[in-house]
Length: 419
Image (cartoon, rainbow, N blue to C red; front, side, top):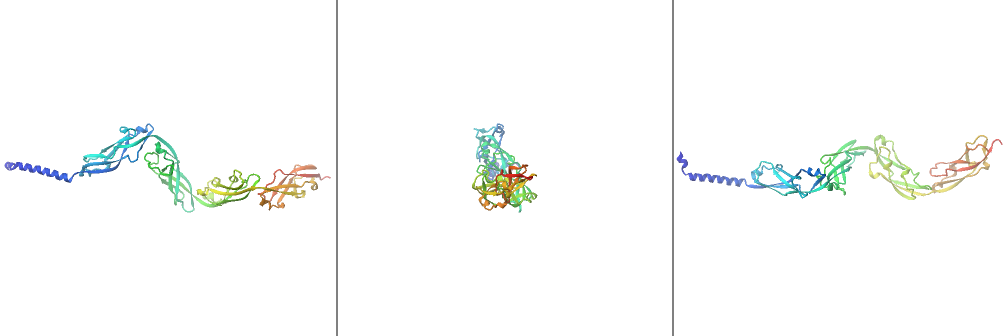
């Protein structure tokens, strides 16, 4: 048996070696070293509190916080490797250089055998800046309309102010914080969710939120919207004080003449006309042809709104002209004397005629006849015979368009009834 094993021993050894070499050749041909690229692996910056503790922060230059990793390994080993096997970090405390770059470190944590690793970039580029914090008012934008017969009521954001922190140069880009919600078809009170949008001075959303910190960065922001009943009502202007002294309103017109209001059912039910007070018109006391825009939303009853912004303003056109004066003469027998004391009487034959100046627009004065004017003399201060100047009161039927002196007096002759 031993002789047989030793027969042709050199040949047998050569055969074993050849078999091993052949096996190695086959294995290497079938499992060659290959390359795979793992793209856009995010770089995690660590120890950033080194800056934040000094009221500083950093801004990452766009595109420099991602790295491509090229792995060289045998085919069977490459198949075991996943993107999540790589830990990619940049240490702000240990590896910050020149205040502008942080070295990227790539560590493979899997169990595959790797020949070598290459990375597409060596550093994250950063700008060290002063940290800024600013508060912004939340502006709510709505799109769509509530269900038929309803109008948008109050719109209440979850919070009226949002505090935003980050690199000063980035925070300064933010000019407006917007919450946009769609109210199409809503009824009653609705709570709607959205993401806050940060816009610049041109109303364009800023490019990168990653450098900023605020409460609703990664969660929804809620907006509460109520609905109200709507109704079309007329508009009326009080023109009694629209003209300065000595002038009158010859004509007035305005567009539109109706407006849609909204409110609770019990609030809008009794309203048929919006009455705008006199102080709304011509506060500067101008004359001639005047065109004035009046914001009638300032004069709404409590709990009533005008839902459409473009209906808030009414264009009022007035023609304000100088008043004219016409005189009317009243003989003593055309005057009514009141409060005459016992024992005296008015001697009409010896009393004065009253000349009454009446001011008004020419068109109104043309239609004023004397029989519409009543003159009353108050005799309450007269107790004995003699001549007296007593106050008179003027009453003109439908006379709102006219004015008369308020201190008019007439001279009367009083005699005793005992004579």
